[in-house]
Amino acid sequence: MAGLPLPGPQLITNEAGGPIALRIPSPVQAILEVLRDDGRAAYVVGGSLRDILIGRTPADWDLATDARPEVLQTLFPGALYQNTFGTVAVHRDGVQYEITTFRRDHAYADFRRPHRVEFGTTIEEDLARRDFTVNALAWGAVPGAADTLIDPFGGRADLERRRLRAVGDASDRFGEDALRMFRAVRLAAQLEFTIAPPTLAAITRQAELVRHLSGERVASELQKLLGAERPSIGLRLLEATGLLRQISAELADQRGLVQSKITGEDLWDHTVRTVDAAPRDSPVVRLAALVHDIGKPATSSDGHFIGHDVVGGELSAGLLGRLHVSRPVIERVGLLVRNHMFSYEPAWSDTAVRRMIARLGAPAISELLALRAADNLGSGLPADANGLDELRDRIAEQLQAKAVLDRSGLVVDGDDLIRELGLAEGPILGSILDRLVEVVLNDPAQNDRPALLLRAQAMLAEDR
Ligand code: ATP
Ligand code: MG
Image: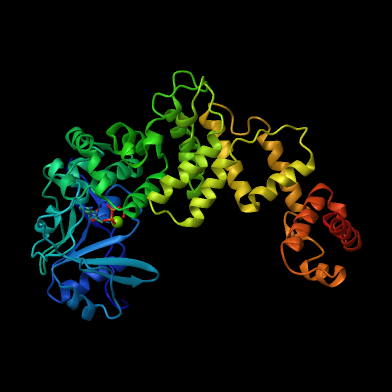
């Protein structure tokens, strides 16, 4: 886009009449110019406009135009058709700009987004099909006119009140696409906005429509929600509206389940606190925090929750499987949930510390420590309560000493045993290698070639 003029920030006025700066980055401005120069209407729309108006960095840039996708491809050579909804993606310096041809709404068949597209001709039509008033703003113009803010639904006022309100009749809009209910809750968490009472009431009334949605779409919203600074805002809304019960009855059953942690708080309060306390930059730990006690309602008996870690591992796999979360993530979260109940004592031997690392693997062990710290905070304790700081140091010490944790750390391998002991490949060989790992976990000094070969010979003799 070199050679195009790069205008400075543009000004619009706020409600009180004072100017506020609307900073449209120059690549976006340049894309708008290309469209205008071709005689097309062009606007910044949706979430990106909402975000810059409140001083947030947009996750992505959405532009809307009356140019059809085939025209966009000639105006922006190399642009990619993004999907079947008439969206074309343009890349500039590693950033993606999505240009979407105006659309208009038509009848939705099945509570999901439409499967076919009808192109529209005006920005007003395009804004009318959007979900919330703060997402139904546009900044731009038809060719020859000056850029203005197009705000047919009072989105600007809602932005100032930090409020999400459905465009038009909330019940109808959620009936058209049930995902909008999840989007409302996710956006409330990300933006720290409230949901207008009629919109909230419509979600509560229609929560069960969520069952028509694909697991992937729900999971994507849930993951964005969990990535918010304070996911608790969204989690509490999910529970209060009944959306939570639609995705996990086990989590919804945590509400009202009393446990002896923070006075007056129930298990759901504990879960929500734990998620907030989990590191924001670790989606896996945040997800594990959400489900770490999912096994408690099912195992609750006389104030105890025996086996809730194991049951929780299974229930979390069930939930994440329904949401089509990827296999490795499901397995990692399950591992963390099954192992979250360890109780460290300073009397633990180094062998016990090494066994714990070996059971989890090095990457998961630091996630488990982060999960436990969050669990402590969620229980009203200091993050490092119950010797967690000491355990963390002792684990770091073992990792630094490159402690042998699995077969790959042994100084002998299968080939050595085949050659030196005349063993054949097969289960006996595998079992001997596993037992040698045990020997070295107990005593790292035994990781020595002659010593291990002798041990292996003795094991072989015993097996026979
Ligand atoms: P994010 O910060 O995650 O990008 P966003 O609101 O921008 O949030 P996008 O998925 O990028 O979400 O969608 C861009 C815009 O498209 C929205 O702001 C909204 O105007 C519109 N939109 C997205 N999904 C829907 C939907 N399900 N129903 C109606 N309008 C939608
Ligand atoms: Mg967006």
